[in-house]
Image (cartoon, rainbow, N blue to C red):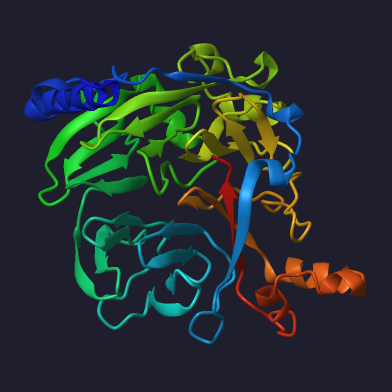
Length: 404
């Protein structure tokens, strides 16, 4: 049997075990699992010393996707971006609206709180089920969850289990929830439910009951699940330096483990040691070097990108799993424009077909053009030069295709 086939068979067998008896194994006692088919990869880094790289060394090519701008499609901020076969789906939390752009940047449609089928209060984040071409989101002003088709058609609204964040995966709803009212035997970071019946099927990553007070702390993130265009959904939680991958049954496994310099690492017992009780925020505020959240994590091939909280050098980072090199993306310049691959204090928005997705604010492009020598203005890509004449425009998506 070929090694890759043997590995796949082992993976399936492992997952089937968890599927056969979820109530006996998962629900009764939360689990911390290591995937026996994949070794946990230790990543030793020092973000404070990371510098920018040459974009020509990191990327094969760069493509720009201006997002059509009109009265219906104009927005200000990309709070969340997800990519489907046909759309860039963009949430602007300030406008409380989901915008759908075709993959060429042309505006398609939107869902806002005043939509005629299902008005809602406040939309903070959303989740896609790509296999069914639907999306779900919770109305944070009510206990209701809304479901729409990706073409904008309303499906239903109903009361469902409430999570801080969740993903839809192969008929499961996998959510991150820290609920101080939960029974201690089920007190876990991740809960898995049947997406149709809301039946609890599993609980994973147990949390000591002393840590229930983590809900009082600044998590440094509003999202915890991240999906790249290929590979598993990744999960991170604050005060945990592990990055977990969900298998196709929605079971989390330790995949990567971040190891930071001692001066940047929170005490391992910060949330459980009575000595620290009630002093957490003071400790974290007193020393800004302490990193307690790894977020905005995406992977493609040998490349892993992430963001830290507190933010280090106001930058996202790119790590090569093969060479163990770490790059500061704010200090890495786009070879075409000379602008940073990610803006100050901005994370990578996602990965599609091996390309990092980041945004270029229109004002940054306009300023760049105005400050350019006349001899260099013609070197700008034609599609971007055509935008300069406009007074305003949506952000431009930059797709930076990683070296393979």
